[in-house]
Length: 600
Image 1 (spheres, rainbow, N blue to C red):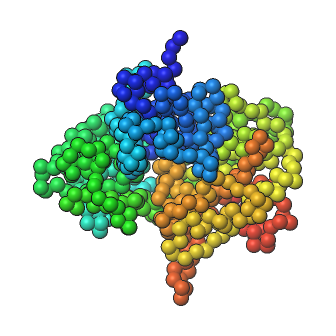
Image 2 (image 1 turned 45 degrees about the vertical axis):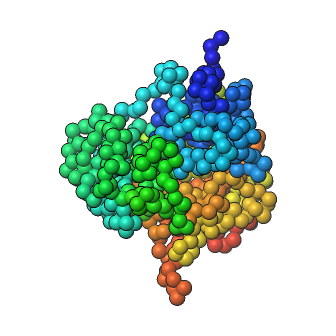
Image 3 (image 1 turned 60 degrees about the horizontal axis):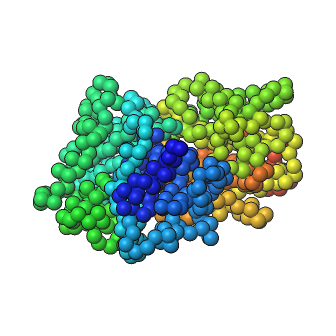
């Protein structure tokens, strides 16, 4: 009988004297979504969600994932021998605590340092050092055991013109240099693909739904280097980048470059700023580990300061929680904001056409499935100007599937939509001038009073957040309760965040800001685009979510300081047949009416 992939891994563990392995759902670029080449967790477990951590010992295995994927993981892990651990619940142990109980002092854990964020790997090293358990950071047997492993993508990259970005590469690089100087740094190393894409006005298709190109970058006072496989670059792209002062180097030259640039023997090594949560551990150790002049695999010695930064040996490494480029990217300029408005108008035309098509199909008793919904949305969006791709896999969830937060239909799960109950559709697209992400819950037939109340109470919270005014310096956690307050009154809640940032023809999930129950120190500022998506999910019955995109804009300056507010950019109609108007205040009803008048 052929060995399973888990069994192959355990054989490699035995040969390397490793008692446990931790496998993240990440790649060397610390992104939320990864190219197939680095989907090791999926290859081992069969789990296809975008958040997870797999732990394998000699006789047990467990997968940790968050609330978005509890139901999906439960289905996909059936008969695999892998236990599901529901991360974030009070009675769920961390994977570190679970491993501590499974292992003994003197045992060894193997990880692939290249696919762990430096901050994450260092946390593991520090935790298990106290337990007298070794962490081996170069355990990489997958190339041997993974037959027909997908190659690193070689899709062609392209330049997003300045009439869409509103700023030249040369200008962005200069602004980044100024931000580095403000932090007393002279250079930085970038691994996050959306940061690199934004800085160089470069887009690609190496990761499905994310218009990025696999690459690294280095920026100093005197040079800006893009490390990318030259086979991905046309002559036009090369000419543009070189004309903007960018030096091109091959993707696999990054290690040698880091070794030469940050070599201990050099007294003139630059002061480098890095965000350990956005640089993989292998690269981090090449930068910071050499500054220690040892082989410890522990990176920088020294305690983090209260401001979240950390200086390495001789002050040559500065660590930050939020890289300057993340804030620069999150605050959209006037050209980008205008592009978002235009992109959303076209996108909403497609959505209105879709709903008209759906209702006509159901009225004519035609067979419509969840996959038909996904295909029709893609067809209608692709007809719009500047369309690039979908911005994530469409969630077309009918009935009980709506309770699976990140459900996506497959040929096996594909449900027929009947003229009764609720259809939840969460979808979006990348256009050259902007990215969209919206969710509508549609009554496709008769609904219950419970469904209407749930929808209306959720809508009240959605409106409360959309209408919020708040002082400068407000963070997302302080706003999150606005969206939850009414469903809390009914003893209901949702476990995902209320809002995430959205990139400009870039990743649909973008930081550094967020709106969620967890504390995030990044304040909401004018120019930031953030989603507003509260939900209710009743397992085995239905799910409801309402999502629009909010632009933060100035509101007023009073004797108490500056105040901001939100402008709802999404204008797609909300299904009023699901609204119990008797539960709405006058202000809430006026808000809903205003959105309806502005829709296509």
